[in-house]
Length: 323
Image (tube, rainbow, N blue to C red; front, side, top):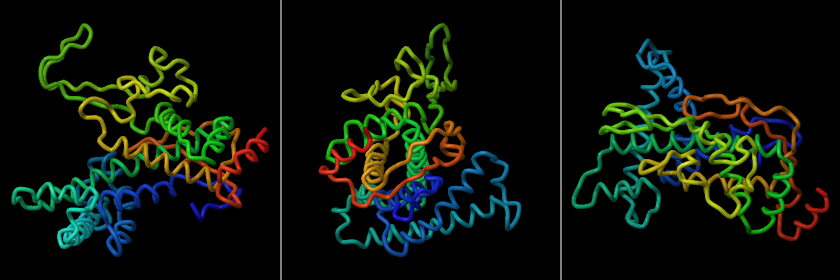
């Protein structure tokens, strides 16, 4: 964020991708030094190629040196080498039992009872956590910028709150952004035994898909569901079965709490260090990026750098300037 330009519009999603990637690499991979730098360079283009392969499975085949399939294989081999080094560093760390990154927890679980580390499975699990938690959270942050610029009254209140230690409205805003602009469009389940839905009886092997957007817009569960209104979540939690940006039930996204905490911290940092400029531009359309739905223009931001980081003493000044 320190490199953001003053008064010039730019796509915020690129910065957020860098931020969320770095957080994942530190908190999940426990990567440091050379491996951290190498993974930061490798994973964005690797994710981009991977998204193309998701959208066009035929491209997964190796059609030659410049084909996406060949590039993916090269990148995956490089990724595996880097992860092997990170695993080696963890196993050689005498403080492994005290480490709190996810990789350390995975290794301890595999080693308990005299087990061995499965490096291939470990690398695949880490890649799943990275892809699932990197692009999605960056997209949610870009949508936050896109929504707040078009709702200046909410933005003003968030600035006032960010001057202190409260987070009630900010957390409610995170929930509301995830309701009106979910980054995943649907969640599915596979029927394992005969299952009744209304007048239908579904046989095993059927797939049930819940549309997240229609659920979030349904007036039976969200009064004025078409409106962006963070106050609906001030002082109350979203309904478990009607607010499902992370899916639901036993297979709800295991990174949900981490993602919400991450979005909250990044938004607080933004609000304390920058004035986000409102806009009358039309809403940005959705764009599917292979993993998540993001603002079509990347969450265009325009900011003014604050001379001093927001402090509680500046709250009254902000209120006076905005009134």
